[in-house]
Image (cartoon, rainbow, N blue to C red; front, side, top):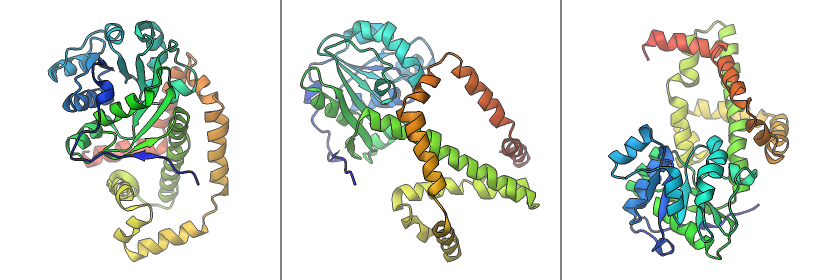
Length: 331
């Protein structure tokens, strides 16, 4: 069993940010992650430049006390640039506006391994490429920094052109609060593959389970209101997942009745995981690591396919039932 190296810092103090001293740090993209990381860096003593197009996010940056400017200008001026725009716009944005401003000795920090691992970013020679990837939504990255509760974070050096990329990586991780909850040494390959595996195997399986359970229960004569409330509208599954994160996958079972514990563990013991494992393995190796999904998602028509899939999902029986139940419940 493989074990990753993990780096922690004292929640009561900011770790070593020396590798950023005298270097201009920039946050490119002031969305959910960008806003959180820019504010965390500033509170850690490293006030970044902010690059963003002229939109509502730029207005939010200005309201927070930053002076947002065009991304190309900020990338040219920066020594360390945190790339925090959506995955799908990164390749064109990097090619057209960011890469021309990168110089030998600079550092590009990615928060997702996707585009780098699948070869979709063209970065000039001599530029360090590192990954600092919080495993948390932007709002929680900010909240957990302020509370000093921390959040887990994946870190890696993907290209060490200067010989000092690791020091820069850890300084950025510390600056955004990523070492409070544990900076886990990983790789762009691992981060991208696991993220996509969750999205393309785990969550589709969960959605399929809910869809099937709804169909079976309604066929048995139970009301949509009761079925959907039991399955997820009550919010109970969210509470269970919260306790799984805090107490463990099986540790949280103690919060359920003994009848529930017996029923869950009895059914789990009888479950045949072989087909599910085969399906997950096929997704991981045939779709993800092979690059097949990345190639498909990069095609111009992929956006139209996504829109069609969304329409299909919205027209499904469970989605229609949910909309009707929400209307009747006034939620």
